[in-house]
Amino acid sequence: MNSSNPGNINIVLACDDNYARWMGMVILSALQKAENPEQFCFFIIDGGIKDKNKEIIGSIVNKYAGTLLWVVPDNGNYNDLPVKRYGLAAYYRLSLATLLPGSIDRVIYLDSDMLVAADLAELWRTSLSGAVIGAVENLGVPPKSLNLPQNEYFNSGTLLIDLKQWREDDYESQLFSLFEKKGSELQFPDQDALNLIFEKQWKRLPLRWNIQPATWAKYEKKKITNSGYSYDDYEEAIKNPGVIHFLAKSKPWFYSTLHPYKSVYITLFNESAWRYDIFSQVAIKEKFRKFFSVEKLIKNNKRKKYSAEVTFKN
Image 1 (tube, rainbow, N blue to C red):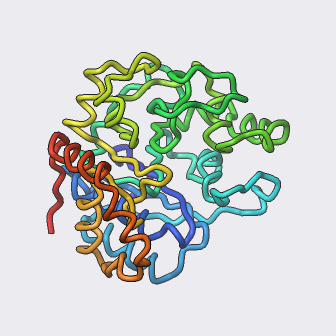
Image 2: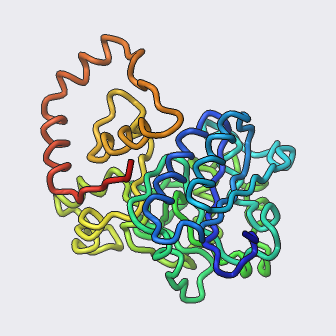
C-alpha cells in the first residue's frame, strides 16, 4: 500500500529499543480494535530499535495487512536539547514535518506507554475546527513556570496534527527556537514547549482519547472544577475508553502498579511474540509492599468493576 494514499490512517510512534516492545503493544492493540486495519499506516521514528524487535513489530503489522515505515532521525539535530529522564525520542514528535514525507498532511501521534481500546478511525475523522493540533487536557497541575491555567495545559501523549498547516506556519522552527531560549527551564520539555507554542490554539479532544490515571480519582471525588471537561465527559471516558495512557509510575509492566487495565495489558502482552513472565525477577520486598497495600488494592478492584470491559482477540 502507498504510504501517501488518501485513504490511509497515518499513525506515528517514536522510541528507542528500551520501549520497543511496549510500543508494539500500542500497535497491536490499535490493529485489533480497528474495523479496517489495512487502512492503518504506521510511521515509526526509530531511536535505535534492535533488529529482533523490528522483526516482531513488522510481523504484527503484516498480520493485519497494515503498512509500516521506519524513519531514522538525525540525532545530531537534538544534541543541544535537555534530555533529562525522557531520552531523545521524546523530541522526535517536534520534527514530524521534516521526518515524514511531504505528502502526509495529517497524523495521529501516540506515546508508547498506551493501550488502544477503540478504533482510531473515529479519532482520525475528528475535525480540528481550524486548529493545527488536537489534544487532551493534562489532568495534573501544569508547571508553575509556564503560567498556564490547568484546563489550558494539554498532555502530548495523544496528538491529532494537521501536518500541512504545521509545515506552512513552520512550527518546527518555532519549537526549536523556544528551546534555545527556555529549554533548561522546561520541566516536561517537549510537552511544555508544545503548550507554549500552541497556547489557547489547540483543539480539545474528548477525554476518552487520552485516559490518564487521574481520571478515576477525579470521577470518584467529582473534583472537576478546574477541568475543561464535564463530569459526563469523565464518565464517558471510563465507560467508553479510546486510548488508555499509563503515565509516570502507572506503567503496567511495573510489579507494584495498580491500574484498572493492568491485567488486560499483561494478557495482551503474553499473547504477543514478546511473551515472557515480566514479574519473574521481582524482589520479595516489593511483593510484600504490594501485598500490604490493602486500601489501594480495594480501590483498584472497585475501579475495575465500574470501568468498561476491554478485551482483545487471541
